[in-house]
Length: 155
Image 1 (cartoon, rainbow, N blue to C red):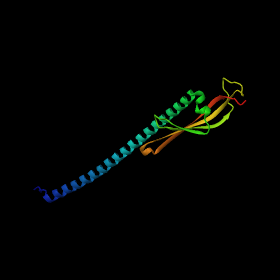
Image 2: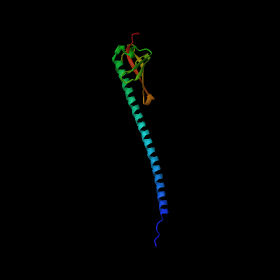
Image 3: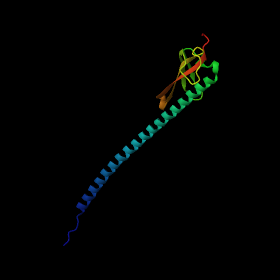
Image 4: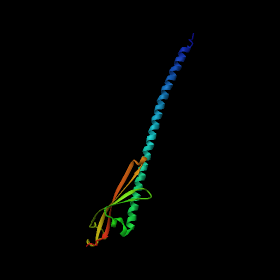
């Protein structure tokens, strides 16, 4: 004779299966949540990196434009007339730049050399910086040196 399964053991087995199903569901929920948090963090990191690269391109472009504009002014340029530090802000990008006159010395050697007493060179420094990121927490800056030949009027 075959023994019939009792309802008690069948209910007991269903309870164990339900318990393990809930444990597996809990584990899968924890794994899914951690993956979601990790991907959100990765997205924020990628966004921050992209903003930094964009700011670097912006500041390089603004500084090159400033140097070109000042060079085009010739005798009225801050590289020729400037004394001390002059602050300039690019209206298009908001990049703040400081043009600082350093010293007037003899020019470095060049292929188009002239008499040493005819020209002297004004050494200037262009320092630019811009803020970026959430609440402008990031800050990036670059500094360029400019040598501007000028006639040596003093002899």
